[in-house]
Image (cartoon, rainbow, N blue to C red; front, top):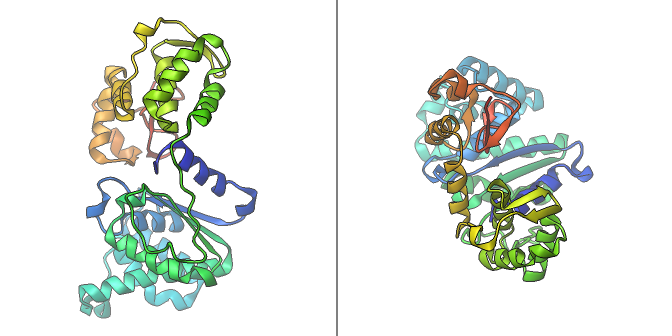
Length: 323
């Protein structure tokens, strides 16, 4: 359930809490295709830390990383080369070139860990890694090393993952696990009441949704959203009423089926844009989206937002804006 609403809500609550006000917050996460790409979440984290932009060329990246590193602590200069190599910036250094792959790996892991630990001496640091069930082995090695250093650092590591993910941190006295299980029937009913309202005619629908979703909060919310989109429910949040008879309640059997149905309901132009973006991956730079879109109109950004199109900003995730 790593990307369901409730784990993500917990992450949002922590990163926006008054308790972490003034902290340096660095967020990254794994993707389903990322296991074959070493350090992918680490690279994203490093780019965020150094404020590297999509348009930055190797020279600009070098300047940003060097400036950040040397301003923090000049004794970190020896780690500049592995960090630049991690960002795919050419490194002209005979000592680095002479290292064999295992030695470069150790230097790279040490460089990222030392950078984060040194930053934590300047200010508290919150590091967020999401979806560890898709993590690559090198990022896992970094986290394992970082976890060992947490007791002496002002650094909080917040992660989420699905039950199949395994790690060796469970025995640490400073490790706390918050398990997100499916909602029991009473809690699921309370959630639906908060979403739908208290119209007594909604009772049969509530019972059906609880049985269909087995208490999965993400699935529950998406089912309600689908019923609103298909005009089975009319009104507004906390005040919905039924507009169609039970035989017209078309609720997909899985969350994946709901998302597929929503894609099918998109206008053709938006669907083509989504299909083009899906080839790239979860995060699509706006400039690249413009280049691959079939028409200028499908790539323009406007204030009207539709499901599955990019959100505001230069990196696009769950939504695209389209005129």
